[in-house]
Length: 205
Image 1 (tube, helix red, strand yellow):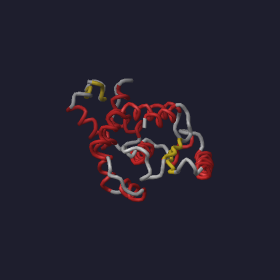
Image 2 (cartoon, rainbow, N blue to C red; image 1 turned 60 degrees about the vertical axis):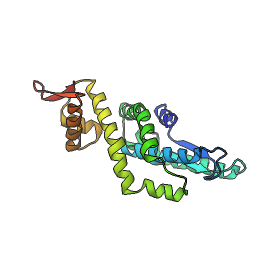
Image 3 (cartoon, helix red, strand yellow; image 1 turned 45 degrees about the vertical axis):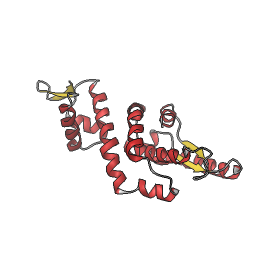
Image 4 (tube, helix red, strand yellow; image 1 turned 180 degrees about the horizontal axis):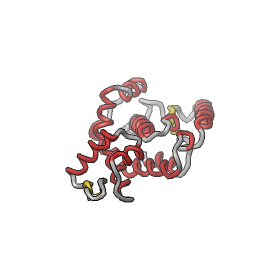
């Protein structure tokens, strides 16, 4: 996951991963299942921070299926060209793009821990994997364990630059003021932020 998001941070407009066919891994770790899980999580994160998840793709093939590799890469390149340059294609400035990607990269050790403890799935078909990652259960887990943590991390990063109001934070992060208030309340209890009554704004504790 770190390699994927660093590639985006360095300006890659898309990332393509090739993996062995599911249930044909040469190692007992079933690395291709782990890769599929991490790609699905990464696509959720891309969507959450305002980037098109189609910028990341994984395809399964064997070493002898060079035709599948060529077709997969060529199709992916066409799709990415249609999306346009990363960030600009989604209406983000370079500063906004860097901020969002860096906030995800900082959280990756935590995300890996969550994936290992709560989201690691047994070996199953690709369709079953995709069904799970489109399920309400996954959406709930993602919001509770990753999205909320990412938002709080982004709020703290913004406040390092100076005090901000709830409305200003909401505008910067593309969140509703009510969501920002909830995160600020939680962060206040953890003594990460405080309310500065003289400025009517939140600041770092």
